[in-house]
Length: 332
Ligand SMILES: Nc1ncnc2c1ncn2[C@@H]1O[C@H](COP(=O)(O)OP(=O)(O)OP(=O)(O)O)[C@@H](O)[C@H]1O
Ligand SMILES: O=P(O)(O)OC[C@H]1O[C@H](OP(=O)(O)OP(=O)(O)O)[C@H](O)[C@@H]1O
Image 1 (cartoon, rainbow, N blue to C red):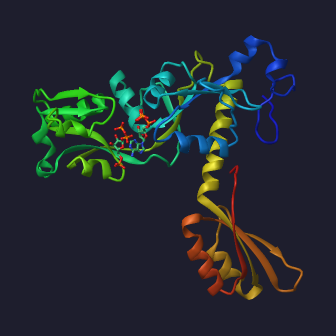
Image 2: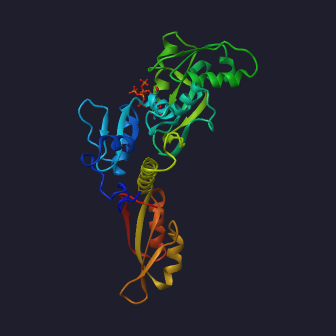
Image 3: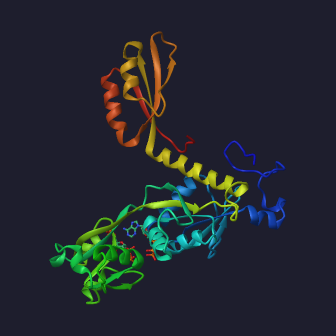
């Protein structure tokens, strides 16, 4: 399928994507359904990323679907915990949620990681935290094995069961795992649990509830993932496959823009080698001649977290007029 310069797809007949110009059936068949968390912890971060990557959608009041402007993509706003099963069952084509929820759904369905009908496209670098076994502070220095057979409350019953199965080895065990949908940390204080398995980011919630970490169960971050392409689901080739690639490229481009800045400076020919060594860029620095003889302009991408150190070192190496420019988007 041909596309526009900005990567937006268009139909074989060359007509731009336009809902009104296409028969209804063709539109539905070619539209990629993209599930995003409708609220909660990661909602704002995900929406900011999608906007930055050029997926603009106006969500009608109280509706959970919205068409992206000028793209054959429909955003479907769902509870984060439901997104993995929607993607695995092919009810939507692609989704975003934490790897904790994805792994919980796969474990619950009995899939090993490499068998699940899911393909992870990108790690999105947000929502990083860990799932931990937590107990009242006075018991937290006990080994995790001591909690085999006890009462555990969690929102992640499948991962918790897997954790205790591995701990107990071949021994039969009767750890009582109770699922709740929120306020997990309250369960020990209420006398309903001996320990909990819950997410920890800053640790504030855990400490406030008088709990501490016994053991880590899983590290998690937010992922972009799609249904594994097959002939049957039509995601191996064709217009939907192209649109999925476009989603991946655009989000990867946006992520690069959030991690890098462009540094530009001037330097005398005698300092050129030292300046280039400080900013090698992704491939190599761009060097252009200034009108003033023996002077060059050098530019390259550097990681944001290294930019201040590099600018200090450039100044020491003789560079002048050092500028650091933010990127709004990239395609690598
Ligand atoms: N501090 C945190 N606490 C909980 N989840 C976090 C945290 N930081 C990142 N996350 C991620 O966010 C996900 C939770 O998303 P979300 O808040 O949308 O779900 P939810 O808890 O079902 O929503 P809600 O609490 O509004 O019902 C987790 O699965 C995890 O991947
Ligand atoms: O380590 P922290 O930074 O304190 O974050 C972790 C807490 O945040 C989440 O709960 P959330 O506030 O989303 O509410 P919930 O209990 O309803 O899930 C999670 O379940 C932890 O309780």
